[in-house]
Each structure stands twice: as structure tokens, then as C-alpha cells.
Amino acid sequence: MAKIAKTNAMRLLDAQNIPYGMLSYEAKDGKIDGVSVAEKIGKPLEKVFKTLVTQGHSRNLYVFVIPVAAELDLKKAAKAAGEKKIEMIHVKDIQKYTGYIRGGCSPIGMKKNYPTFVDESAAPLDEIIVSAGRIGTQIVLSPHHLLKASNAKLAALTH
Image (tube, rainbow, N blue to C red; front, top):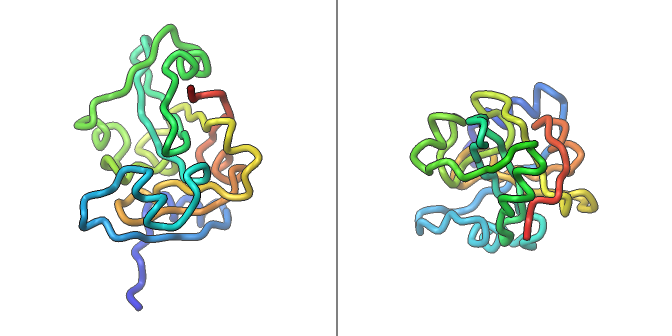
């Protein structure tokens, strides 16, 4: 079996001695949205989270990690970030700001440490699944370890 190349997110978890698992899925069909990924890896939708990058009224960037089937509530997100208003950044700008591409954006190991918020629905879970920083690869870890690794806070973020 071929050795999987570590992503930046995995290297950061290793450096912090944070335990994690890895899941991979086939992405050749182009279905890389979170719901499709959850189906491909055989995990419940409420355990698989997507990473969204936004910009506040202040021009500062914020990262929100929410369940794949949920929608980010921009008012709740703005409140969590202490902003008047928040909007999604353009897909074309994701790599410029994070170092990751759409469909492979991990909340761990971005170019800069942006303020990061994880939806409060993650708190009672035993494990949470997020992108490993590459399309086709996911990381499985405890919500506590995700918060620690991404220096994130829990917040109410979805409708």
C-alpha cells in the first residue's frame, strides 16, 4: 500500500502530539461537497464538518467549521466574531488566504491563524471529521483536539 503524503494539517497535529485518524475517498467523480464526502466515507452527516472562510466588515478574515449539511447563519457568525456583518470570501480567494483549495480546506494549518469558530453541535460528539487539507483526505479527531489544534472557540453558528 502506498504511503500517504502528510498534509500541513497532519504535520501540525503530529507536532502537537494530537491523536487523529485519516480517511480517504475517491474524488474523480468531482463530488467533493461535504454531504457527498460524508456518504463516501460512510460517516453520519452530523460528524462531518466543512470549513468556511469569511470576511468581516472590518476586512478581517474568520474561519467557521460547521456540519456539512448545515448552513452558516451569517448573523450568528458575525456575533461570534464580534463583527457588524460577515460575508463569505470568493472561492477564487480561498487558496490566496488559506493555502488550501475549495474542497480541501482544513481548519488546521492555514497560512495564518485566523480567528476560528466551531459550531457548538460538535461539543457532545466523540469524534469530528474535517478536511485534512487535500481533496480526498479527511482527518478524524475529537472536537476537543480540533479546538486545541485550530485555536478555535465553540459558538452557535447555524440556522
